[in-house]
Length: 368
Image (tube, rainbow, N blue to C red; front, side, top):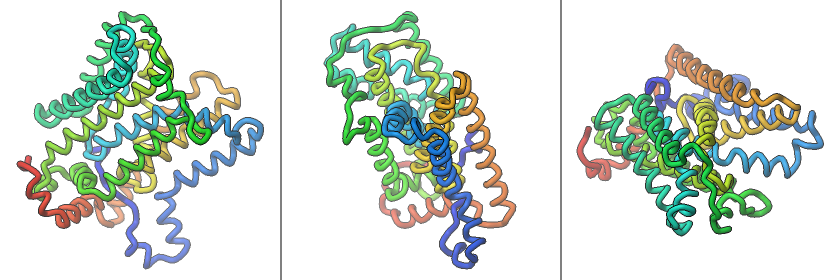
């Protein structure tokens, strides 16, 4: 599984673009921004076909409110994917986290801030367990996180006894999801803040370059002084914390906890992250590509539903898009390799990060 999500950047460099003509340059940039262009065209198409319902603020608010949780989960799963690992716990964990966010207040009398902090800490703790299983116990990330996620789902079923958990929480807790800012759902601003923070971390801080270097070639990263084990475990911890945060938002949205809700978020979150690896920086997961991936899913599903599509269209659309995204990413990597161009920009970025941060790398701990 890890080999299919390596951090192998395929975006053209300035040197490559300098020697190309106008048409050739457009062809070279098309794979980079093709999904962005498709998103704009799809929105324009639905706006023309559905002028009374699609291009409205009501629809924009609805899309943001519905897709914010998926966007947060996609950003969460993107973090370990940058290191070449995958975290399936997010789809199962959100079931338990939203139940606990309600039950800690209604059954155990936790104040809502303490309940939220407890859920976030537990989510990070599960991420730590996943990281230890993958890096210390050397269990494949797909198997480890699938097993951990299934256990979390079983705990959610046991805790709720298969019934709804209903309780009255303070209005401040419900405002976590229900508040508006500048006329838009506040959840959209959560996504924006997280995206900006992750973008800065991955693109401009050593930790991000280390993540990409590990994802491209963990052995080479270790030889260059990166504590591979530590950073990989941290990636899972961050993923677990974001999944718990999404669970808190879901609890504030539903106002009840039930074990039958949450699993449906797993596939769209993975689709968003995988789609993100096909745009902006094709060949590796990236923040804005992930946001674009979630956006095109939201626009496509919203438009299709407004045409009166049946209930099964959404999972069909998500599954088909996931296969197409993985196929495009794999084809782009193979074409790039056959073309004899640079095999991986991520190792180069990792190397530049290491050379520019040799002092911090030398203090980074033991090499795996």
